[in-house]
Length: 197
Ligand SMILES: CC(C)(COP(=O)(O)OP(=O)(O)OC[C@H]1O[C@@H](n2cnc3c(N)ncnc32)[C@H](O)[C@@H]1OP(=O)(O)O)[C@@H](O)C(=O)NCCC(=O)NCCS
Image 1 (cartoon, rainbow, N blue to C red):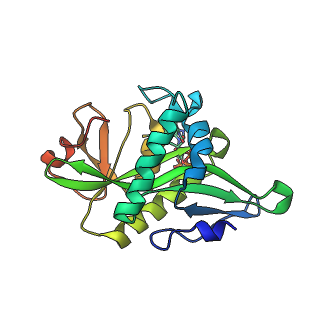
Image 2: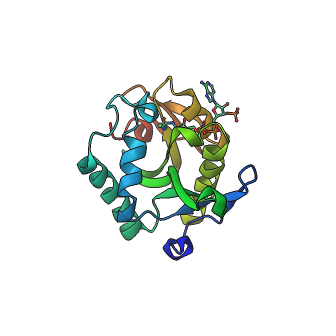
């Protein structure tokens, strides 16, 4: 059933989750993901480091999701919905979070922004890092010339660690003072040219 929703390009194969006897599926999101987008982004626990705070309503969720769907339609790459597909006794599939890469303008060029946000129940199992590594693979398959970056609030240590484990290294700070990590050295014009969102 879920297989039918796979995007043909730049999706990863299943990742094994041995502890639960299931696997993760990274798939192109659809409009049907609105509830999961709002639940995960509206949870105060997933926004402790987000100055804007949790998502407030469905309208914000729809706007965020619509942007992600446009990425896939127009660019052929974007953030994935991350499902845990579990044995029947665990009641099948469940969306744990959202992760992947999407285009972002950066001064004179474009970069691919690495993203991850998961329901707290999924934290601390190494899954975010495993998916982030798959996202790096997907980005390189898509276009090895486009740098991959991640940025986070200075105190968001789990986020920074996931970026490091995906192979990114510090390249400077954006105009808001957030550390920027990337898969290659980047000129100052690119780092300082990242949008303030
Ligand atoms: C960021 C996030 C995806 C990490 O998920 P996770 O399930 O903890 O990730 P993983 O288990 O793959 O790895 C986390 C790493 O951070 C480390 N870590 C966790 N808490 C930490 C802390 N307080 N200080 C330092 N390192 C920490 C873990 O030990 C692990 O590193 P290790 O494997 O070297 O031990 C998750 O916390 C989340 O969704 N947060 C809310 C959204 C968010 O902040 N997204 C990033 C926005 S920039």
